[in-house]
Image (tube, rainbow, N blue to C red; front, side, top):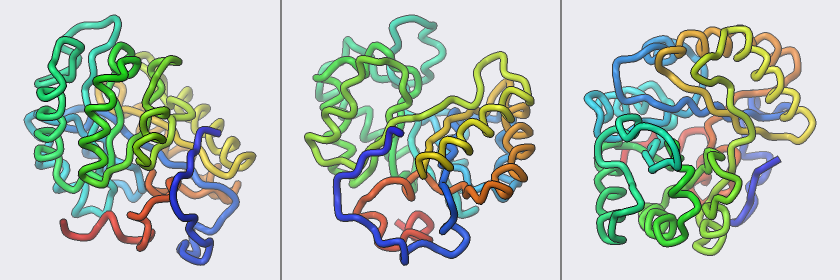
Length: 260
């Protein structure tokens, strides 16, 4: 289990009754920000996903407001340069290795402005950047200034995000499993949901990441197909912040819904 604790523990009595079960899974859905497959389905559902929004897209700000109004936790899906892949996959104003430290910080600040109500960040791609201590430190210094948490999406085994997050005393964790990929079927997503459910039963908690997009409907349906399994196993789906021990958790049932 990749859950890390760095601040004062939260007592079990702070949890709502429906969350006091045998395990918890946070489901982060990446790539919100545009009009693409699965977006409206997730918004119309009652699944407490954590909505990870890419900044600077045509609907980034609008979807952040909508997710917040629906009571969903919002995070920034920050685009970072990978070792391989097309630059177009990163969208506008990505964090790339050629940027000066001040420019990195400016872009992170702009991303925070573009995605209102965000309580944390995770990385979009970024296998190159997550190994770069200078750039990750610059990103996380801004994250700390804004009182956010960070989730490492797990795109590189050589990531320095955990090391620097611990050093800066930023609440953080690492993705345990991906629910989908560019070829995923509905049944594959269901199987991955079963896997993370069983992980939560065994270890108490798990973090899974899925995506909206071309295969977004398969992801949505695979997740909903697995909800009866979760109920049968007494495993609840919670906002990702509920798996992090942080000062933000003073009101764990509602803090992410409060007005900024």
